[in-house]
Length: 490
Image 1 (tube, rainbow, N blue to C red):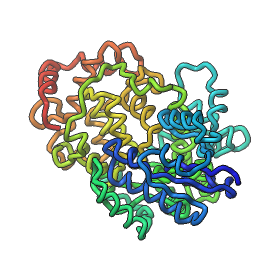
Image 2 (image 1 turned 90 degrees about the vertical axis):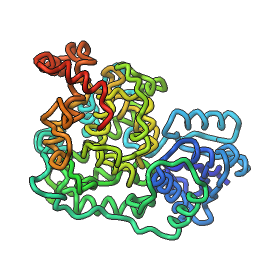
Image 3 (image 1 turned 60 degrees about the horizontal axis):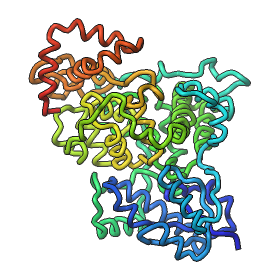
Image 4 (image 1 turned 90 degrees about the horizontal axis):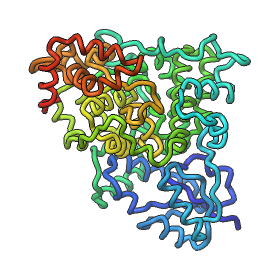
């Protein structure tokens, strides 16, 4: 008999186990992993529900083990297993040790991404810095996505400008069909009971399941998004509404990161909808860029940048995460944008990318929160936050702690950006136009305090030098700096 196939919890899709139909499949719930960090309660639910649903689908082919450690589980299997490359350095180290001990027979390449790590290394060569746009165009060419021969459809590679519209005026929600929500079943009920009994150190609240955890659910969620929501996705892609947590986003990051969907299947579905005339090109291109561009880029750079990348801290940010931030205490926050984002993490373990970058990340950057601690927080508190996802997104893109290896400038802004791209400021106690006083916006005032703190670095970058010149013209800068150094209310 062939060796059993051991699947991690983010390797649940048919493109992972399907080619091994003659093998027994081993799935392991490790109690040590479950209690290792304060994960979001709903994240644990999604992971366990996905594993248990797959075991139920595979029937007698599956061996489902609940043990303290992975090693204990493999010892109980009684013969060596094969496994695909894991998605983190820590898991890769574990698999290597188990391989050396004879518990793992073979380590197979991961089938969960479009581009192999070897092909990325060939493309990257000896580059020390990277531009996502270069990688994205290479991906489009390589996989022939949204192409007409050697040229991009429509004559442009990037429709970012068309996909940065603020939300429509005077509306509480987008006029878009709601995201598809999977029905819960007896397995979900069992997972919920088991998590209650384990009394783990979780964050966030329990709640209804919004994300697909089976291959069938993932295909349904993808089809629903492409038909009903992708046509509306592009223009308000970066917009925020207090009363519309999902906007027109796909909610496919969880099934993608659980390995239930292959990224090429996802972008082909979007491309087909565009070519059928049901989705505008800017929206289709923007979504393809998220999946085939940014997501694949982050995966590759996690490995390329190496183990020490998580500890990069080029801006010298050392402030520990405040308790209210770490505990997702949205009620302790006054700023409407920050409270709404924390509420989304607390209640669903999810916010969309602009809330992550320009609200949560922007706040952390301005206040000097420790980037490694912040990266861990994003990984633990977000339902789609696996280990490989967060270092490039947080250390590089959000906190600029890598000194520019990933992004050419820090992503910091004042309240004007949030005011333009959301409806948050209209009901907020803070005024985005004010930098001084009791109602001074912590993002606006914080931006100038942050600019002053890093003025030499910013002045040396042609993309940020104007911010320093603007700061130097502020007549009340000393008062703003004093105010922000003592700020306790956000």
